[in-house]
Length: 409
Image (tube, rainbow, N blue to C red; front, top):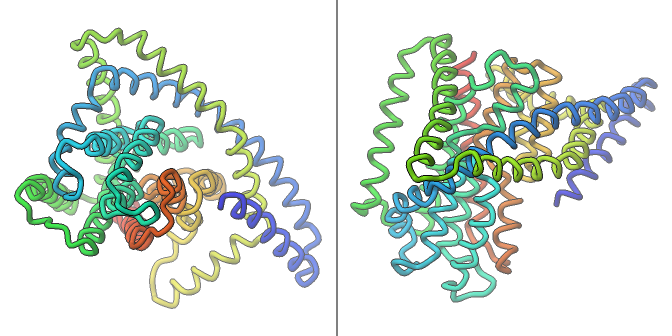
């Protein structure tokens, strides 16, 4: 899938450039594309410099959280909820613990820990699956909630904004939190409808009602604030939450007699190893996206969307941020490249860049998740998994656009 997407970027760019040269008489288009190739390669290295530091720092703190048992504690808290949402999984089955640990890790931004835990959870669910090729209800719910991308600390988004010179990298904290909440809720409700889950179960309601009331009350409070106050509050909460979580990890780690410095160094080494492996992928995607933009093909596609939006009488400023949304279901690295390219083209604190950052933080690579998780256990018939996952992702994109107009327009 990623192979075809990457090759497609270059082929579409080539066709667009030929049309502009042969029909439009623009002979300089090829020079612009070649210049873009080298510019994007240079930008990749600049992004990687900060990425090394950020991943090393963050994975160091997260290793302390792991050793302090914070992820396991969150798993115990969420366990009763998933036991009700997956009634075909026997009480106490290892799959429930793995599932809750996966979501706890995702919420804390522990992507590298979440993926292997998630694969173990999918294999555990496959042991209960009567079919070797058809996804079970529990597997579908697990995958859709993974694809809805509920992340409480979008540290990588902050990092990309910081690298591009944002005045306040964390200003998108609240918009991302609200948009990802919408995508997760839609994912859960869509699966519940398809599987006829008993969301009115007392235990499920004990989790959902307080969360819904808290989110509703918070949004009502936000509705009383001006756009400037919303942006300021998002900045304060983003920075306060990030530093507060780091402090919490350190304090709990110390109380649990974790050797915090040694644990930090251990995690930091993992962060360094992860970061150094990302450069080839970042170069590949940024160069492809840069060529696509320089060829005029991306702008042509956006013009079509912009024309349709104008026909509906709507504001078109968000359209420039849509390239991230268009490729995110297929590839996280392509979406990341689109985000960085949007920041470069329009400015890191421009409205399109804020929309793209919010979309990037509140949606997931649906088809990649489907391929990895279901491919790991040989599932071929995914039933309603694709529809529910794409509905959740689409809802996250729409929510991201609306929230950005609310906060930043």
